Length: 149
Ligand SMILES: CC(C)(COP(=O)(O)OP(=O)(O)OC[C@H]1O[C@@H](n2cnc3c(N)ncnc32)[C@H](O)[C@@H]1OP(=O)(O)O)[C@@H](O)C(=O)NCCC(=O)NCCS
Image (cartoon, rainbow, N blue to C red; front, side, top):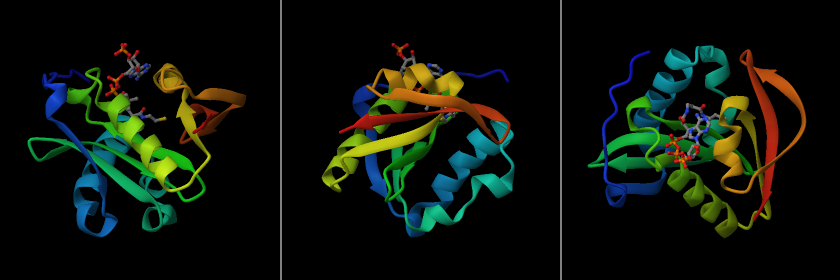
């Protein structure tokens, strides 16, 4: 995939809690592009029953949604996705930091996630530690990671 990167100014990134009811089209569009089209995750694995109860997050720039994440009530962070053309400019890190702050404000003491091996260093930079063996989800190798907050 050839990516034409779009340069952004970090000060212009806006991050907020999303509403699955109102923001579903934007969230689903980003996840479709990143997980289904780019990473070939099957549709039936991407859409699950947890979206209804999770807290969702959107990062946007000039009112354009460019990144998504969700936090399940049990503390699992997932569906971290930055549109390809906006990567490597700190959007993912800022979004993850915002999710961690929200998790703390919700009273969670620890969060965890299933990290794709390719993204381990991204999460390590925010203090996550990996544990256990490699396992596969959607044919992609993962490791469990956790962080006390
Ligand atoms: C992983 C992802 C969310 C990172 O978002 P991003 O906005 O590019 O991340 P940042 O710019 O904040 O990167 C922060 C650091 O993490 C590291 N990093 C970023 N993306 C990485 C990747 N794909 N693999 C390994 N390290 C990565 C970089 O070293 C970067 O540090 P640097 O800026 O000092 O070089 C993004 O690449 C993405 O959406 N990937 C596709 C979907 C995906 O794999 N999601 C994770 C599922 S577990």
